[in-house]
Image (cartoon, rainbow, N blue to C red; front, side, top):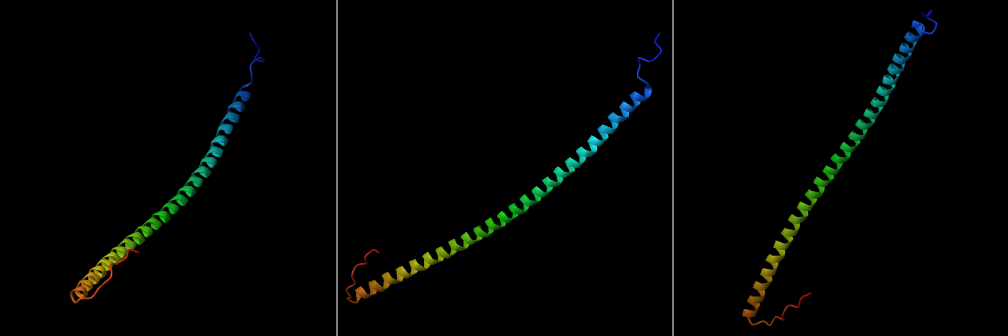
Amino acid sequence: MSDGSDIAPWWVAGGAAALWIAREFIGAVLNRKQDKAETDGNVALLSGLTSRIEALEASQLKMGQQLADEVKLRMAAQEEAHRLRLRVLTLEASLRGLGAVIPPETPA
């Protein structure tokens, strides 16, 4: 039989196991710190994007309101122009009825 000199002592195996456990623990801690940093970066990125989206939505809402106001103003101006045009036609017809000679309108 062998006298045990060709077999590693028990403390070498225990030391190797302890070294492996320590390496795994340190790796897990470092990986956790890296994951936390990445998560914090992602949270900051998302909050920045959220604020940009909210600003864009507010800007779009404001532009939509401005366009709606402009459409209302243009419709009111067109209605007023139509009323004035009808008034001019009525006055011209009245003047023609009185015998006035009104030259034809030249398009601009």
